[in-house]
Image (cartoon, one colour):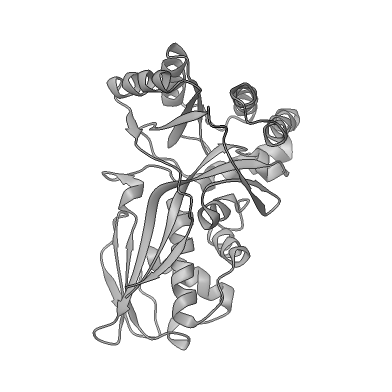
Length: 318
């Protein structure tokens, strides 16, 4: 048995600004996608999954079945210019588990696609004897996304911990010891691709002043002390950018969570491309975060018990 895993991630700051060349802060989380390969019992490829709903599927050695996990395999093969997986590996039974990225049937928005893509890439590199490289994993995921995205999600799950990401390069970073955080699910899953497409359309036809201000706020965070004051200024720039670009980053649910956070003395922001998914509360007072957590739970929101993953993607043999 061969198994690979890759963590989830959350964007602390730099949403959209990173697409304009600004640095972003991305934190890997201790929720993992796991991909396991075992020898096939019948010389066919088998794909099964837990988490995202898909019926098990199988196919002949020279084919790929209609299965979500096989879509990542196809993207990897296309990048390698290999027409069929049997040309470089014997048939296997591959199981993908992303259940940690869901609550019921709802996707939480913790970067499951980047985690699965990275874990599947590491697995296929191991099965085919290829060297695994972060830059190649980033290129494959971008291809799978239709050529969109900055690559920060792959960089985050590859390295683990907190990274600064800018222009394709990741560097290690640390949050100040007095900055505590709590992740909350807004109650609605969202998709990244449509929001990126809307951003691209807005950027082509509108004034970029709000984006310029967001870039400056993200750059100030990168060059500063990552203080709560800097984070607050970034949040204000993100809100102004959202109002100008009409991307619905601050949904009704996130606005409500912001109100609950402010009442507890906590700074709150949505995370990622917008439309729902998750947000994060920051405070230098753990008791204030606990109050916010209770208020959010009483209001029907799901608080997530998450910590930083320091290790990043990994390979292990059973």
